[in-house]
Image (cartoon, rainbow, N blue to C red; front, side, top):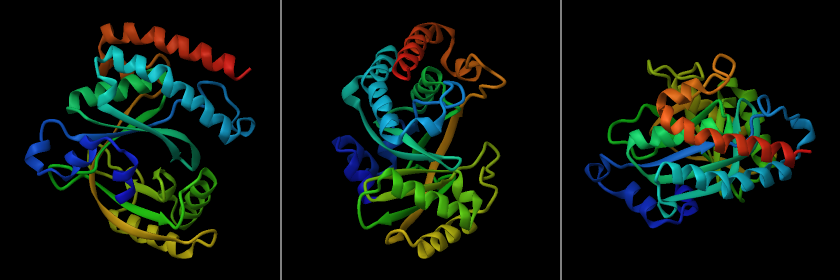
Length: 269
């Protein structure tokens, strides 16, 4: 995880992750993984939107809507560090945002729900890589011999899924590293449908058989990870997120979402 520490330069990230468990009980450092484009809801044809353009649109949201969300939640901007990196979900590699901050779990869920609500995301992944307990989610780290670009990430993502479709659920990239998490549901069952042992073993097989670049599995561990999510088909106005946010905050976030929708539609013309 050396590049995860290196990527987020704020001192509190490293200090919290290396602190004794008792020191981080109430305010762990959490990682929020999310996108700002929803190809279905935003009516975007992915074949017509090059990756570089996705990066531009994601960076615009990071500079505009993200500060508004933090302001409404009364989170000081200096308390959070956000990077734009390749990310993957359901075999699709996209520009994604990775935000890290030291925060209590209740505020974390409200922040995640706010992101999902404004950007119309199916889910936002919240991860604690230094859990107080054993951790409910196994993860593996694949390391390249160079920084991971979108093409690198997409190629390995597809290859890993060809070894085991469970590996096509998602990934997060930082510098030379790709993190693959076997996230579990509320009952402790992996969404991937495979055990942690198989998940990590097949990740190793994927790294060993990948021909496009030199890669290796350099580590594994356990984290606490959860999705904060909304089913946009069943709840087209984001009702699942609203349950987490409360109607007062929803009322203040809705204009942000409306402005974002309009700005995105204009940018895509």
